[in-house]
Image: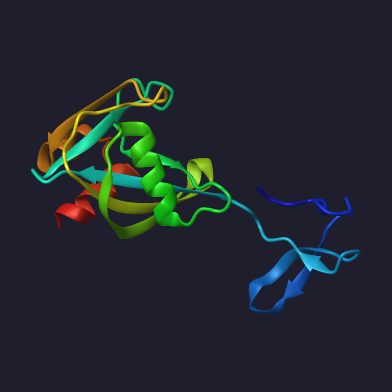
Length: 161
């Protein structure tokens, strides 16, 4: 999101040189810069002790492609808490270990996606109403089920390699 008006006082923002940041939207009334805002979410590869990964079908995301667990970070959560919450909400799996893998910028939706590996002990799925289907797949098989070049595929390839 690009700011044109100050969210506090409603004044038109002007472009002002802010240190090394260059020209930045600035409110002269509040004496405050407003940097472009983008959403942040987590994306997690949920992997069990048999080296299988949970792939999801979420028709509101795609009716043709499998995806990984992903979700927005809620106010007050840190990254790991958000990832663990999303895994438990969407799959019912309990995270035993979480490892940061990488971050990815998803330009189409202006999102910073923070990628994790979430290790779980395989148990029965208990899916949320956001999820239409979840299946376990071997890691190498799963690579080909994710959309080619997608952030989900990039994350999984980072884990495999």
